[in-house]
Image 1: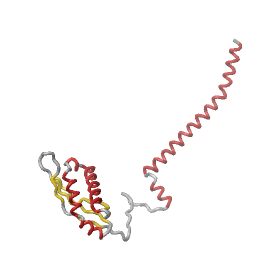
Image 2: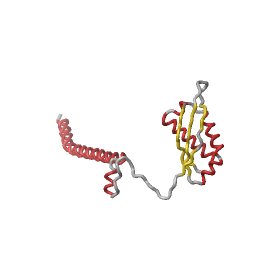
Image 3: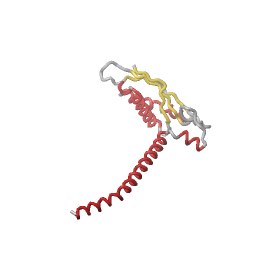
Image 4: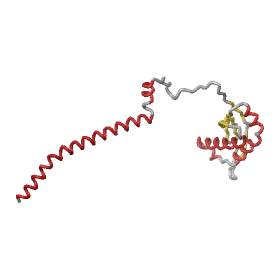
Length: 178
């Protein structure tokens, strides 16, 4: 029994040193967690754009008016638009009542000289558009996603038809489904 008492007293003597070590370890963990939360908050604010006004002010940049970025004005850059003739096609309805699509588009070109090249190839452009548009269903044109897909497909087809002329964009002037 005496040996048991001695073993217990040695073990209890060891506990006195473990408690300060345990306290230091907890303090280090708490400091690390607080630091990580602070760093995560700063990173989150930076990536969501909440720090942009603060950073702009500290760097000395002018503040932009509420509602967006300042428009960039480039001198000497001209934008050329060319209207294509109106296209009227019968949509693919699968035997149901006939539906029509009337569409007017404009092409954004790089230079005035490109207009003559596009005009020379207009039968090919119109043919590519009509072949594609006749296979569309009304469901394909619904919503902004449908209009976006239509724009991308028309852009691809006109770019292939008038190559090497560079077409910057296809702009819808009118689109009517009836």
